[in-house]
Image 1 (cartoon, rainbow, N blue to C red):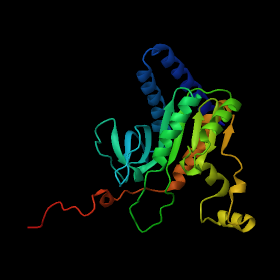
Image 2 (cartoon, rainbow, N blue to C red):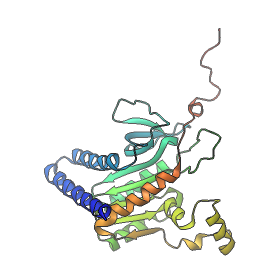
Image 3 (cartoon, rainbow, N blue to C red):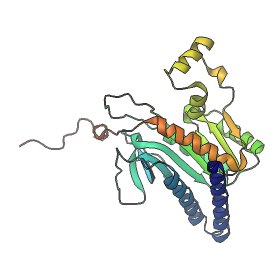
Image 4 (cartoon, helix red, strand yellow):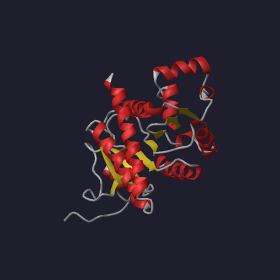
Length: 267
């Protein structure tokens, strides 16, 4: 099959480009980081269906709370528009966001903890979708940590479990990916993959078999997969599948207006 080999080639190419950036921008870490973001951005633009836009900037909720600066955003650009649309760093309503991607050079303990903290701020933003008459298929947004290097899978898992200690599942990252090393499932995506969507027939069947509390079916905080050069393939399939199942997203501009404020009078 062509697809696995193709994405393995892409993963190796991404590592090679990252190594060149490390060599050529050794004394300019900010520029190196931006160049690595460009590598990931190009991959997403080239390989996600066209209905999913790729942007960068900040995310805001209807109550005025901001995310941290986002390296990359996967958005529903067909049904939403950002503020400052002609600039590189745009301002997106959180309802428009499918996923926020945090790009890291190396997933050492300090960088991992920093990324998780940023993800918690994003995951807890209040979302109030426009009512279109159809139920919102998924109301969550994914948080992805994308690294270009990491310790051994066993060491990384120990570091990750330490970093996730005390972090509610709803605020955890959903994916962690090093394209030619590992892919990790955690957070609400991990729960969804194991238990199915809330109110789904499969989830109802699990409740019938195991009772109202399904925590026993989620014994681990995270699933760390050592897929080597096929890590990018696994992540892409899982991520793309979630996007296709998530449905369209509509922001309601009215919810972003200050309550009880008069903007003028009718003459």
